[in-house]
Every structure is written in structure tokens, then in C-alpha cells.
Amino acid sequence: MPVHQRHAPTLSRRGLLRGGLGLVAVAGFLLWPRSGRRPPIDRPVVQADPWPNLRPNSPKQKQKDDTPSPAGRSTNLPAGAVDLLPLIDLKKDVIHGDWACEGQALHCKTTGLLPRIQAPYKPPEEYDYVVTYYQPGAPRNGVCLLMPKPNNGGSFAWCLGGNATGGAFSASSEANWIRDKNTEAYRANQRYTTSVQVRRDKVRGLLDGKVILEVARNDNRLGISTTWYSLKDTSCLAFTCDDPTVFESVYVVEVSGKGTLARSNDPPRKESPAPPPASTVDLLPLIDLSKDVIGGGEQWQRLGKALHFKGVPPKPGPPPHVQVPYRPPEEYDFVVRFSKPRLENGISLILPKPGRDGSTFWFISGGGSACGFAAEPPLWGKKQHNLITQDKAHTTTVQVRRGRWRALLDGEDLLELTADLQKLGTDDRHKLDDDTLLGLWCDNPTTIEAAYVVEVKGKGTKTR
Image (cartoon, rainbow, N blue to C red; front, side):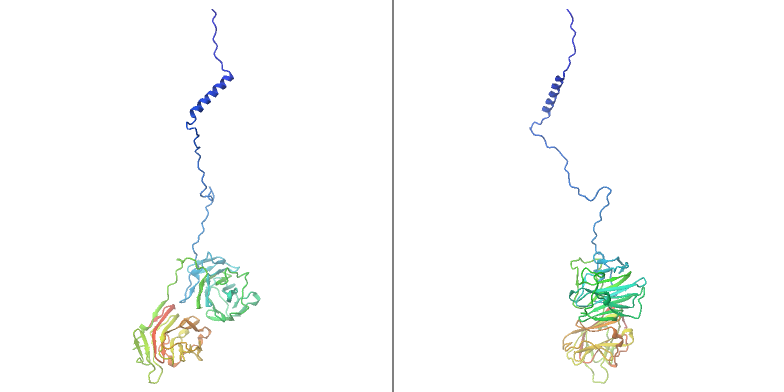
């Protein structure tokens, strides 16, 4: 029987295809979810970039620094004055130039193109605008004080210094500036105090207490070039220079009315606290009636803390008056509160003359209708019926400053002296044993309720 040889089985292409489809079907059956739904795909959540401005190798952006940058603090600030330097924020108020506070002074470091600062302060109707400065280099151009014209009509300036020898009020055209000249040239590193006295009817420009130029406040020539002296707000004060300058003091003495801050919503500046109050010296406790009355002490007596003058004695001679054992400093306010039961005669405040070469006195007399400083002839102040009233307490003040004296009654300005200070004098009835001291004088019944000194610059001395 023949033996048949067995061959190995072979796979056709159709068989391979059928086998592959079967395997896919089995795998799909095993893997298909029993619930009949496909599960959600777990995709990563894409969030917004929390630091869009930061990229690898990119510089870090600086945050804005809103911390105020005050301009300093004025030296020798008079009592009651408004110091403008602490109000100025060098980050907000610089209009042009490179400015920096060094120590307590404000330094301008720019030459040319009129670097300037606008103070955030709107002055009252009447005021003194005062700046003390020096220029380290040889004077080329000086400084200007910018102020509002009446009725918000723009600005004008008082300018002086540099290589010129005078001062000027500005006009809208350079050719129309109102000029005057000094005889002395300005010097490098010389400290100067320039000021502008703005009153209802006039404007005065001063240098170191001396009046250089005076114009009517409504003078139509007053103005300014907005090309070079532009401000953000012409109702505010400003100042400028054209060479490196050190500003030691920038302040306002409010004479009539109150100024306003242009940035009332600014937070209080901890960096610039208000200056400490000036020293006050109570004079009445210093007086010993057994030692300090010239001409006999029996007409003066104490009524509690007050002093009372009973009246002129029948014997001939000047009325007894009080010499206060106190020598005042260079700058001060002499303040007396008094009342009178009758108004036949007045009251006088005796004080040393400028230079301490004798004494003079401020008086209210003539039944309370006249006032003035002693001179020959008298330097009369405001004349008005019933300046003082019978049996009413009044306060009179003499403000003594270098180059300027001012007398007030109940806060009202009655007389101011600058150029006439050298005319001050006295008479035999008001003489003191020591002309460097203060004194009180009256020649009909008067009660001195208070007498004190506010020391503004320097310290007074008690002589006993």
C-alpha cells in the first residue's frame, strides 16, 4: 500500500484577513464598557498666565512709587507763617528742572530753560511772599517769584538777582517789564531774602527788607510770558531760577484772609511734621513793682495776675511806667492785652530800636482814634474813630522782623514800616533806664491783662 506523504498546512491571504478581524472583534468585546457609554477624557485644565509680563530672561517691571517727596523745611520761619517747602511734592509739583531736597534746603541743579516749581497753595487777598536763597556759582540769572494776578487773570513775577543790579515786575512782553536798579551787584554764595508784599491797592518788591519797587496792584502792565513761565494752575504760587540755586526758605505771611491748599485730598505728610511752636515768654510774672516802675510804683498795683495803672499822680513829671526785666531777641512779637474804663489817653509799648541804639514806642492814643510809632514827626497808622472801645479787652501786637515792623490791633494790620525804620525815636516821657529792654506805659487808668513775647528768631534774656 503506497505510503502518502503529509504536507504542512499553508495560510492563504483570505485566511489571514479573517483571522485578524476575529482578533479585533474579541478585543473590542473585552474592552468595551459594560455601561454602554464612553468615559470622559481626562484632559489637563489650561489656566490664564497669572504673570503675563514676566517671561524667562525678561526684566522685572518697576512698581510706581507714590511716596511723597517733600522739598524741605524753611529756616527762621516767623510765627504764624505758612511754610511752603513741606507742602511741595517733588514728584508732583516740579514743572521743569532737576530739584532735590538736601538737608532742609531745596536745591535746583539745572541751568537754563527756567526750572520751576509750583507750590500747591493759593494765597489770600493780602500776603507777603518771602524767599531766602543763595547761588553757589557766579550770578548769571537770578530768581523769580510767581503770583496770581487779581481776579484769576493769569500770573506775574517779581524777579531779581543774576548779573544785573536791580529788580523787576514782569509783563507779558519783555520790552514792557517794570524795572528799577540797585547800586550793588549780586554776589555768589551771598544769602539774599526777596519778598513781595501784595496788598489790595499795591504790590511791593523788596530785597533784604528794603523796598525796591512799588506798583499798583491793578497795573495793566503786569503779566508773564506763558512760553517760558507756564504753570499748571495760575492761581497758585510758584518760583523759578535759571542757574543752580539753594532755597533755604519759601513761606507766606497771611495778612488778610486765609490761603487754601490746592491739593486738599493729599494725605498728611509724616515726613514733614509742622514746625514746633515758637517760644512764648510771659512777661507779667517777671515784673517786680518795687523795682521795675520808673517814676514811683504807687500808681501800679496787681489785680490777681493782671497789672493795673490807677492814673497819673498829682506830682509833676512823666507818668510812672514799667521797665520789663527782659531783653528781646532779634525777631519777636510783643503782645499786650488791655482794657480801659475811660478813653481820654492811650497806651504805649516800649521796645528797642533796630540796632539797639535807643528805644521807641508804639502808641494808641487820642481817645482811641489814633495810633503810630514814635518819630519826629510821628509815623501815623490807621486813623479811625473808636479803634478801641471802653471797658473792652483789646490786643495790640508789634511784630519785629529784620527790615520790617508791623503793628496790629485785634488782628488788624494798622501800620507797617520798612524804609522808615531809621526814623524811629522816643521822648523823655517814655525813656527807660535800659533801652535794650521792653516797657509798658499809659497815662490814664488801664488794666494790663496779659503781656508776652513770642520769640521768632533767637532767644531773649531775662535780666533778673
